[in-house]
Image (cartoon, rainbow, N blue to C red; front, side, top):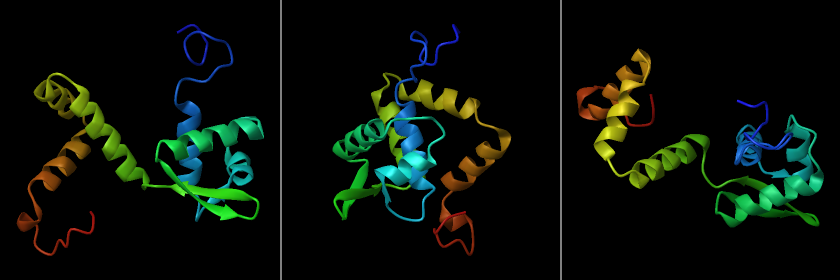
Length: 136
């Protein structure tokens, strides 16, 4: 690595890093946040206009919903973090040319604990008395 955040430009963040940080701030919140509230929860020294741009882009992508909050908007994720991650994983899998190879590689790189959890989930609720499907 050359010491640059995105592999080429000093001080620039990797593609998607800001969006991920904004989403993380929103997922950790107890409810919708305004751009100022999001900005206050981010670790980097960002401009308010940068946060507004990121929120607008995420909203345009359907990743956020927004509600009027006075003269501005308050934003919240359209999906919870687990649903968002699962959707991204599914999209990546569907975009590959060899599903079997991708799934094989994915499973081979799981920790023993995650592999056991995946086996448990794949075995179905009928094999687990008392499981109501509400989570693990």
